[in-house]
Length: 365
Image (cartoon, rainbow, N blue to C red; front, side):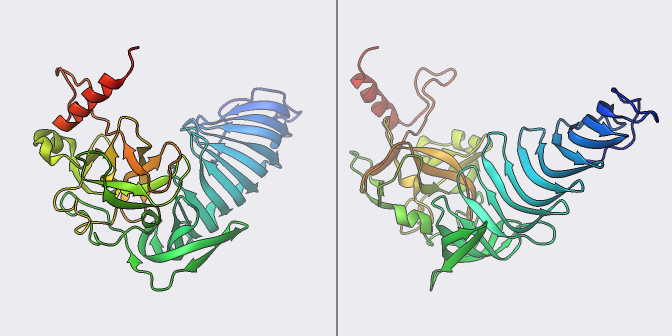
């Protein structure tokens, strides 16, 4: 964030030595610009840098250096509120994404993250621990905390990625420092991201958060087979289950028979998550259970992106209204009802039949 040398005479009042004095604007050789108060050539008072990449830095300057609270706004609209000493980040800081969601809470020392820090994901999960000398979430006392703020996986992480961790409970947080209680006899959890051919190395190791919230039983929907049910009452916007699977391409899904796509869900524009046989059987795979949620045109849940500590980027099942204990959890499968060049939905036959029945029940507009 250094400004370099000034190209031109500052725009604004000058003192007897032709130095900026008062409110001035200076444009630097890097195309950065500073607007603020000067006293005999030094920044003193409120001022704001406008950097060439679109980011800005605003705060109070003393003897040419930013001191106290400063606000750095990234080019994408994200914001860092930090404490500055002699122009460098030193002290507490909070960082928010462009949508105003908290993504970092912790300390800085000499412009690097320092001490115990929290990193928050948009889905509500977080990683907490003491960062290393490079400001990375690397060490043997780091934890991933699920969206309930209590269930955690505590142990060894490298750059925020789980290496070897055990189940723990977050008991309290004091001044940003968490206190965990390890569960005796906990299994070991490791990073286990799927590939195009391997769904999981430990496919029979249940997720501890999911286990507290859902179970699989015969669906109450006619002909649907098994379904996913709530173990507990849950408020709206509660993550209930996770949808992990092998990662294949949209082209692969589109080119095969619909009978093979019963447990597929789009992750992004490149990737589809799939639960191939025999892994739809929970005796063969139960590390995640989101694929057991059946379809409804009036669902109580939705699919949402989720960064999982074991599986990486996947989808989760999140409530869209309050649900009761033992209530079946359903989602709208979201097939395209008006695909280009086709007369009806691009969907399996059972879905088309359900759609016709649902539309027939709807009152005329």
